[in-house]
Length: 128
Image (tube, rainbow, N blue to C red; front, side, top):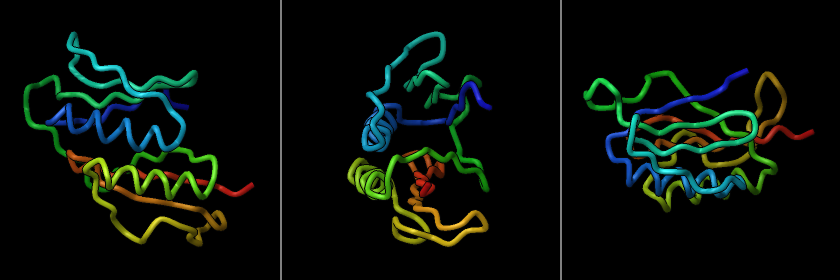
């Protein structure tokens, strides 16, 4: 459905470290740092990409209140690894601890974090 998602960041070094850690825990390779034309860190998959970028308008980045970016996790263990890697890399765990939760879609394994810029992200495993 999506070709790309971008998140604003004020400290690219901290964001690069954080996203390399959380996405690495989900099996993705490290991001590529780009200086121009849009400074940021880019994570590519065969189906899309994530950019963690300095805002083009030169203003400070801020998080979207009510917004969340969810990343697919291959297992419940990957959800926990995502949460642990994120906290170790400067993120903040929010909401309930990583683990199973009841939802309208059945039991999901979830972990929610705030990245160094305050963006809300999560890892999700949907048991088959």
